Image 1 (cartoon, rainbow, N blue to C red):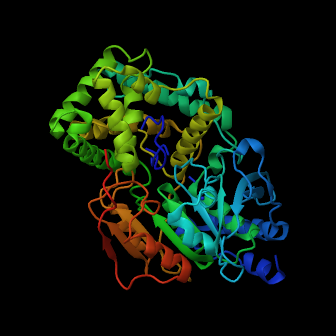
Image 2: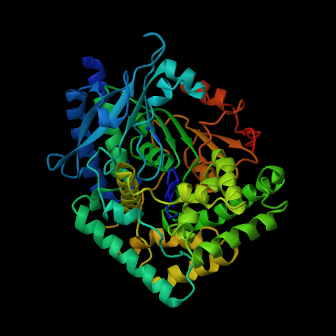
Length: 533
């Protein structure tokens, strides 16, 4: 399951934004501190050399900043440009691709400026190009950091404006209703297996040349080339959700190139978790957070009239699901579409009230609100293309990063067992990831995330009940990155903590970004304000 924006996802991590003087250039091309031990020997050495070559080229070329193209919907003073990177870092002089980047200058004085802060929102498959808009929209949470930093976003390889990949026609991808993810029979499972195999074949057909190179380590190398193109000796990085895994891999491959790093809502970087087990862990966490939401809905029965207990709200959900299975609502909203819409509640607290409100209207007899919220809009060509592209990148990266089980018996056993107690998301998540079982391109061994020479203290921020990236992931990265500090938002579970208003979290993030100082010990913060109905 994806780890960023959930709109119209069937189920990693998320469906969710949005990441020169001669001496600076000399600094920008310091040879990468290649931790050969971070991965597998000679291949990584060759790629480290390739990264150094690409970074030197990028430092020399810089970025030709211009006003953004009108159809990017990024208003002045945000500027846009491209950074050229090798498709394959083992062949730095071979085929090149262009990565889209954007920026807004720091809002403070020249003396206050501390360089660029580069952002990745997650996915895999999320675009970071909206990041500078946090400045133009005067987002108060980021006002202090914006004084010191240029906010820089980018589309990772394969995403959006950066050599985008595709696996299926976008209209085909969004059309509804899809089959109920929860199988009633072996025939249902067989049909889903066929769809997963066809999807992986579609990826090969439409984007085959890119697939072997769609890995997190390659995106980390791209990040280092972007750093050099920006004229920065060291990287300041903010990663959310999957962006935390990108940060973890970058910090392992280039420990001496990190200046400040904030990782928020952390993917478990253990090799044993990437990515098959991580998705199973999500299913458990999603069930817990789904129940948190139901408790809140029950507590606010005066507003929603969906029942005064969790069990009553769950009964209404099961009734809605059964109705949609028998007769898709409005002809288009079946169980799969319901899960895609309702899963945003366990993802983000900001979705608690809107999802409950649509549910409440439906139960009161207004079916149109649910159709408007959960059905695809076939006229939204750009939105549907973006959804399809996000899913393609998600699949390509997770399938290429690690070796996946190829035995259907194992998938069937693991998901059947989990579904018993965690029915909300388990099968939807399984089918979303099943293309990895028949993936046509090479699958790598994940990087062994660890502390290398020169890695500074990293700030880790995590809510205790996060569904998309369970809490254990933050604990694991904290262990692996020596000198890191962990801020835990207790009794909270919204995915993405640093963007929320929390007087215990926000000043600590600011202080770290502005001074580099971390607390003397890990910190536990009270939760941000509970949503109001």
